Image (tube, rainbow, N blue to C red; front, side):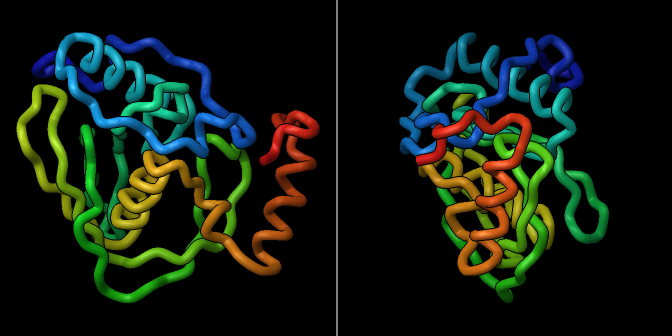
Length: 184
């Protein structure tokens, strides 16, 4: 990312990976090269997230099996959180567990009540390899947990159970973006 520029301003919007693509259910690999290719990927991810009107995006959602995510997400007090994390580790979840509506750019137009902790702490690195710690509460904590799940090969639908899961899967099969027979 260029210093002082708007994240994604120099990025390329990439096609989103949709539910049913095996890359979404594969564990991502650690980033080992903190060079210009990683910086380009992060720029592209911001551009893609903004184009899709999302609040977070993991690398496997643009077809890259690398542990990196970007976010531009408010918390419950409407404080904006903007950044990226390379090789993130969800090191703490705390507070109460809340079931709230959750969506995903890889399941466009759908959402389901998903249980998440209302506090989360993620440790990782910046695109230049500097260590960072990101703390979130409320909706932002949900976002951090959601993106960390992606990098472990999970989508929020994997956390939904019972009638909520049955309803969501029914909606997936009826979605215009769903390819028949593509669900695993």
